[in-house]
Image (cartoon, rainbow, N blue to C red; front, side, top):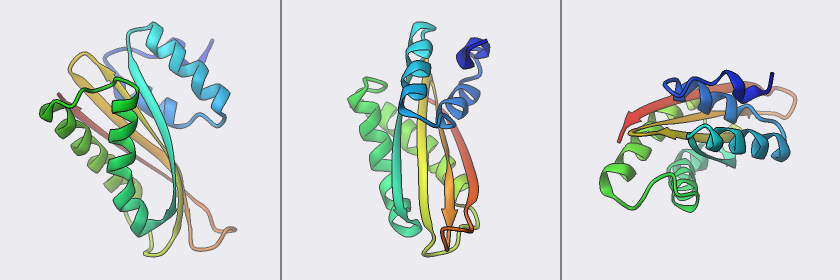
Amino acid sequence: MRRGDYVDKSKIGKAAIVLSLTETREEEEELKKEYWSQGLMCTATGIGGESNSINQKINGAVTSACFNNTIITKDKKEVHAVIHATQEAKEGFLLHAPTGANVVLKAAVVRYEDWLAVAIYGYSAMHSITNHERAGLGIMHL
């Protein structure tokens, strides 16, 4: 069974989480093709840096990825939904992350009809040998 075979279109959060967990560009592209063939619009983007700068970068990176991959239009309701879903996912991801920690993450967006999910998965560390896995999820209606 391929990774996307079990994705239920009504469970876009699960689909976004699975996409955020892909480890290679090839695996990500294969899953995105599979999702698109099932009617799920999707994209993913990677972000890295210090936790405070990540907090500022995430909304712009996710919104830009959505525009660039036609997940949303520049309609204020759609942009608003992406920002709120990203904020919710970001809060889950960065919860209790120490100030100044190094962060590497993948943010994935999946849209089906008028629902949109943003999942964030990655790592944070104060030192390279102390990585902590982290994840966050946000879902909004457009």
